Image (tube, rainbow, N blue to C red):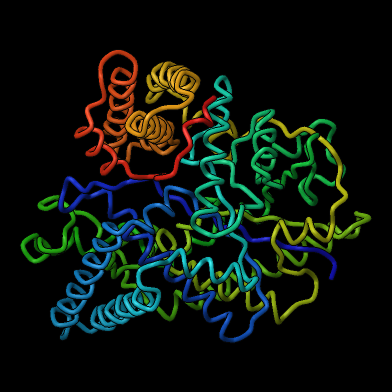
Length: 524
C-alpha cells in the first residue's frame, strides 16, 4: 500500500423536540434524515458485515442527534411519520397507475419506505444500538462533537463554557456508546488556539480542522494535509483534503449537481392538491417536503424531466469510480515526493448522502467496495487506527480556521445574528458564578443548576446563528435562542434572589430534556 484514505461523515442536527405540540414542522428535519440518511447508512454497513467486506469509515454522531435518536417521544413520532409516508406512497401507486413515467417511481418509494420500516423494526427504533454494533465490529469509528455544536472560537473568552461543551459531550458519548470517544469533530471544523487543552482533559486524541488550519500552522507542516500534526500537548490535528472536498462540494464540479440525479426541491407536496396531502403534512395547511420526488435535476432552463432511477444509480457508480481513481492518482503523486505513506482525510456532512444527494449512499457503497477489492494503492482506515500505526508526527500549532464561508466565523457572526453574543456573554458569566456559589446544593437546587446548564448549552448552538444567516427558518432560530436565554435568566433569578418554582422547573425538564446527567460543576 502506498497510502491511506479516511472517509469521515459528520452527522448532526440541532436539538428539536416539542412535546407541547402534537406535530411540529422542524421535527421533520430528524425524520427526513432518519429515512433518507441514517437508515440507508445502517443498511449499507449491515451489508458489509454480511458480506465480510473489510471496510473502515468514521462517523460523528453529535450529542443533540444522539439525544433525539434515543428519545421515546421522537421515536414514537417517527414511527407515525413513517406510517404516513407508506400510506401516502401507497396512494401514489394508485393515483399514478395509468401514468407510465410516474408509476414505477411511486412503487419505488413505497418499497423503500417499507424497507426503512423493516430496519427500524429490526433495531426496535434504537439506531444508536446499530451504530454501536458497527463500532464494536471494527467497521466504524464513532466520534463526538461539542455538546450542542457550539462554535468554540466564539466562546474563547469563556473557557469554562468551552470546557463544559467538551466534557458534557464526552460524558454523553460514554452513556450512549459504553466507552470514551477518541476523536472529536470540532463544530464547523472551527479551531482556535488552546482548544486542544480541553480536548486533552477529556482524553480526546484527535480532531478535524479545515485545510488552511493545517497549511498555515506554525511552524509550517512539512507534509501539508497529507499527514496529521501534533499540538504541543499531543492531541493530533487532521486537515481536510481540498481536492476530494471540491469533487463533492463544488457548485460547478461537484458530483451531486449531475443532471441525472434526483431534484431535491421538486416534491409532490408542492405539486398536488392540498386536500390530498393534508393528512401527511407536519404543520397543515403549510406545505412542506413529503420525500416523494419524481423529477431529476435536468439542468438548464427547460422543463424538468422525469427521474430515472437506473440512470441515477449508474451516475453514482461512475462518480464513485472517478473518485476512486482520483484518490489513487493523488496518493501516488504524494507518495513520490514523501518519505512516508500519505494520509488523505475526506470529511463531509453525513446528511448530504441520501437527504440532499439522494444517490449519495449508493455512491459511498460503490466507492468502498471498489476501494476494497479493485485497487491496492491505498487502504481505507480511520484516524485512530492510523495514529495507532503511525505515532510520530511534526509538532505545530494549527491556524485559526473553519470550513464556513471565507474560512473563519463570518457565517456565525454577522449582521443577522451578532445580537446573540452579548446576551450569551452575560449568561455564561452567570453560569460560572452559579457553579462556584453552590458547592453542596440540595436536590432541588441541583436540578435547577442542571437545567440552567442545559438552557445555556442549547442557546450556544451554532445552528441558530447559521439558520439566521441562511434564512431557512430564521423566526424559529431566533425564538429558540430567546427562549433558552429567557429560561436561563428565570432560573438564575430563582437561584439567586427568589425561590425555585418546582412545578415550572419540572415542565422545563420535560421540554428541554437533553443531557439528563449533566454536571454543572464543569462551569467552575
